[in-house]
Image (cartoon, rainbow, N blue to C red; front, side, top):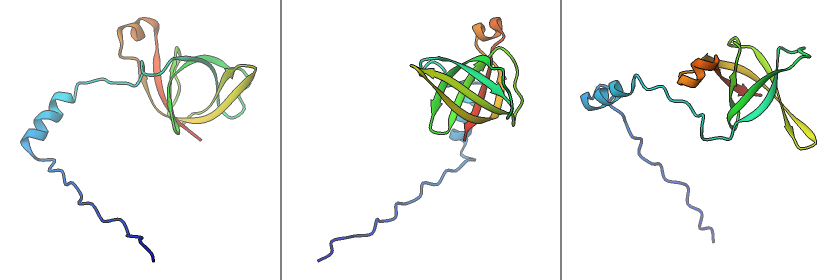
Length: 124
């Protein structure tokens, strides 16, 4: 006897983007400048820009999940740039490759005082 039941389809929640209440709420959040820093213990890393880079530059890994990383640097990177991220884990080095998806100058007061840039990487 087989008791398998295929999953039932759940109704799709439709959003009315022209609803005045939703538009009002979205307008209130337009000026927010949120980032994921602060929820992840920062880790000092060395990044190598480009496929054949031999000299690393210091950076901070401030957030990581699945195939995404957020780095803080004191220098600029270009969108689309290939980056190698090396981090020390005990006696070994963890190496991850990624591509800069987006970047900007830091919004926080301490970011601006220290010339911090924030970059989102897609990890390969």
